[in-house]
Image (cartoon, rainbow, N blue to C red; front, side, top):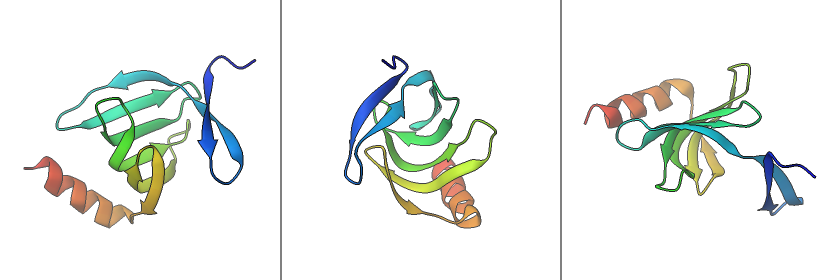
Length: 95
């Protein structure tokens, strides 16, 4: 039995194994960092219960970008190019 992961529904494969959040760093204006037990990291907007929701980036353990763009209830919805993403984030954080 795997204790450091949770099972979540997946429409394509029935169920998938997802890592648990190991550490949370709360930033300003809902911009947070979630570090998972597999050392992946999400930096972006989250809901009050630490679900990826809004603009954000998921990084691999080595720091490379896995997914960057729009998230909804932990599901990746739409990629956004790096330059456009940076421009949107800078506008949002400067308000």
